[in-house]
Length: 297
Image (cartoon, rainbow, N blue to C red):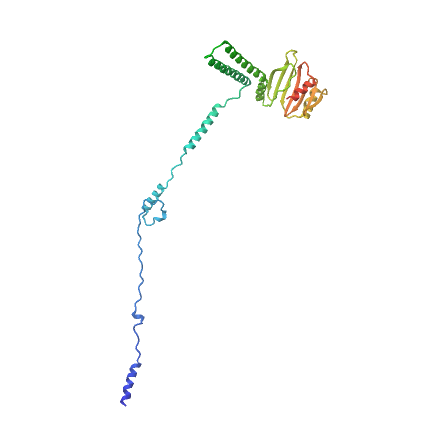
């Protein structure tokens, strides 16, 4: 009986449950959070760096930021533009040419001045030719001087002067007509055909009109040719001038594209914006001569 009591006591002791204390949260501390402390350091900018942005200077005081900005502005200041030496030289040349052209501009010369200039140029050319011949002859005369060489030089100079004077007199009508055309503002022309023994005796220029006077020195006959700027054609000339001046006493001659109205020794025709009127002051001209004059212009 005693044996069964001894076995029951240990079983009772084994059945008692004890609570654990190792996993109880009451006895475990929570880990504390570590808060990192941030510190701001000021870094001084190197003077070798010239392109710092303005936002890079954040840790400096206000006065230091303003001084840094002023330094940046002074360092990045752009020098004023300067003119290239080649451009300066080109501008100086343009100014010199403009000044020269302004000083060289003169008024339009008159007819008499143009004639005098043409004659003076011809005489100067003749004098230059004769002086060249004389210089050549004088150089040769240093070695051999003779009367024949002097006579030859003088004859050559006289021939040159005569040729120049003849050339000037031959072209004097064209020169005078060109001067008159400049003064009147029309493109006047000189007829390449002139009746036998007739020559130009004078030119009269008016506003928009030029009159060429021809005379025969042996017979005293004379006629005049007037060139007037106009917008008339042959039909307008017939209506506005021919029928009023010639009435019905006229004949029509068509030659080389021209329509010539002839009444006795007088005639008129239109060509190229110019009306031509031919009239005899003394004597008479044949129809063939009038037609030749008209087609030679």
